[in-house]
Image (tube, rainbow, N blue to C red; front, side, top):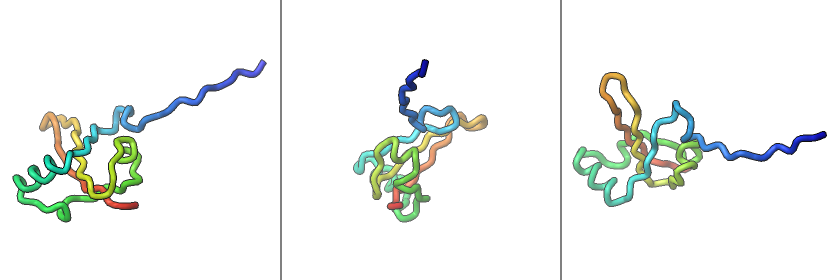
Length: 85
């Protein structure tokens, strides 16, 4: 007897080692960058093809907020600019 396997969708964001990724609305991103005294061009990049970026629907030009758990700081916040690729 052959057992039929069902396909399960795996979301990379469900993995315990992948931090939370959030696409910031343009208005919020601009306000945050202005507060920090930064331009989008000064942010580190994340490729639009990155599995986490794909999972949250990020498009080139978007700013992603990444929230990591930190033993020393509690939470660590990082910003990334989505670029083509």
